[in-house]
Length: 150
Image 1 (cartoon, helix red, strand yellow):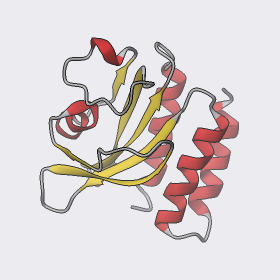
Image 2 (tube, helix red, strand yellow; image 1 turned 90 degrees about the vertical axis):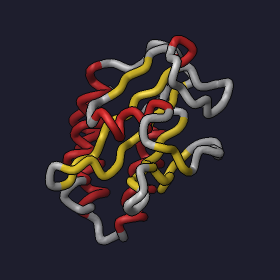
Image 3 (cartoon, rainbow, N blue to C red; image 1 turned 180 degrees about the vertical axis):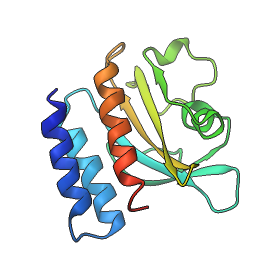
């Protein structure tokens, strides 16, 4: 994984003249295409004043988890903790919402705007124990850059 090249392409997507939603979709599509073990890439955002997340743009298999209550599953826990959550083996995680039998690991990074957690990027992989500090650094960078347009 060449983080510099990935970051440069993300910068191009974010600075493009596309709409916000088109940029988010382009980021999902790009990451899923470029990183072999990113099998599902999506964004969840706080659903108005409700204590829940709503699925926005994503790439990968369809999911029934379009609304996730705060505290439930990995995404819901990140909405409450405001911290990155890397799960190398989802079968060992008690508060996990299964998105499909193929998913073996998951990483979720929050997006902050003006100090408020407004959403997150969520990556599922069909490979266990696959996420590294490089993944975390790349996704943190993406969330930081996105905070300027959200």
